Image (tube, rainbow, N blue to C red):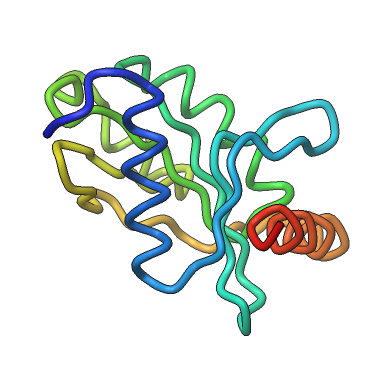
Length: 135
C-alpha cells in the first residue's frame, strides 16, 4: 500500500533501511533539530539522515542541507506521486539524494558524501542512533 502521509513515508523508509542492515532511529534530537530518520550500519562509520515529506520537497531540501553538517549522506524522502515538481538538478547540485515511496522505497537520486560533515558531530549522531535503535 502506498503511503499518503509523512508518517507513512517515515515508516516505509525505516523498514527499507532496516532490511538493508542499518540500525534506524526516528525523530533523533540533534543540536536544535529533530532528524526524521537517521541510520547507520553497526560496523560502519557512515551516518545517513533522511528528511521525510509528503510533498514539500523544498522544505525537505532546506532541512537536509543542515543535516549535511552531521551526516555523511542525506536524503529527502517523499510520496512518489507527489514528486512531479521536484527539481532534481537542485538536489544533485547540493548532493542531496531523493527517495520515492510508493509502497516500496526507490532511490531516484543517490546522495554524494557530504563535504562539510563535522567528524565529531557525525560520531555523536552515530552513537545516538545506535543507542536509540537498539534501545
